[in-house]
Length: 366
Image (cartoon, rainbow, N blue to C red):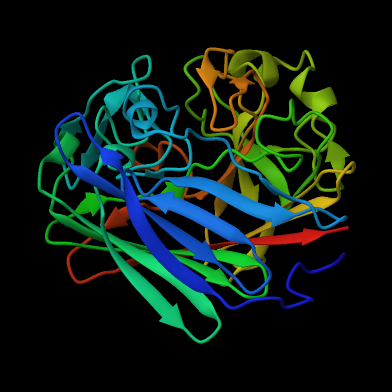
C-alpha cells in the first residue's frame, strides 16, 4: 500500500471563497484545504458539508471521491445529507421521543415515526462559523455552532466544535467536541458518501470492504435496532475479511431486504469497552484504480450505508445522475436509538462534561 504523501511536491494551504447565499439570505463560504501532494478537501459552512475530496489513484490520476452538488440551492433543497455534520443526534431515535432524567422529550418525526439525524432542521442545515487553522504541515478549519435550548426540541444549549484537519501524510482528521448547560443527548458524525473510483463513476458494488466488527445491531421494520447484538458470522454482514459489497447488497437476507441494502450499525471490536483510543473501523479498496480508504475512530460503532435510497433523481457535482449504491457512507457513531436502549453505550451529556470524539480518514493506494 502506497501513501499519497510519499512524494512531496508543494506546500499545504487553506483558502476560502464565497459559495453562495441561502434562500434566507445567509452567505455561505467554501474552504479549500490542500496538502503537500495536492490532496484537496473542500467544505462549506452550510451544514459543515464536505463537498469534494480529491485524491490520487495508483497511476497518479486525481479525482473527487465523494458525492455532492456544485451549488448551494441543491444542498438546501435536495441533499440526502451529502457530506454534512449530522446532529444533535446522528442516526435514528425510535418514535421520535426519549426519556432523560424522568422527563419525556418529543422530537420531530422526519422519517416514518422516527427522528433521523437531528430532526427536520438538524446540524446539517445550519450555518457554522469558521476559523482557519495552520499548524506545521497541517491545515484545517474549525467550525462552531451554538444550538439553543429547545432547538428541534432537544434540551440544553449545546456549544459544538468540529475541526477538519488535512495532514500531509494523507489523512483527514475530524475532531468533534461539545458542552452543554443542561442534561441532553449528543451523537455527531459526518455523512460523506464515498466512491473510490470517482464521483459519478457508477456503483460501488466492486469495492472491497473490511469492517472490524464481530457483531452488528439488527433493525425492525422502521430501521430501529431491535436491541440484539447479533454475530456477523455466516451472514452478509461478515466483513471481518475483505469482501466485495455487491453480493451482500443484493442478497435476500431478511435484514438486507428490510433496509433495501446495507444500512446497519456495526459494533467495533474493542478489547476494553471503555477504551477511547483510535482503532481501525473500516478499510475500503477499489481494485481498478487502486484507491484505498481507511477509517479510524474513537467511537464504539460505525454505520455502513450503501446508498440504498439514491434513486436516480439527483444530479451530482460532475453532472451525473446518482443511482442506488453509487456511493457508500461510513458513519462513525454511538449506536442508533441509544437514548431508548439502556444496554447501548450512553449518549447522555451533562453540564461539566465534554463530548469529544475523533475520526480519521486515511487515503492511500494499492
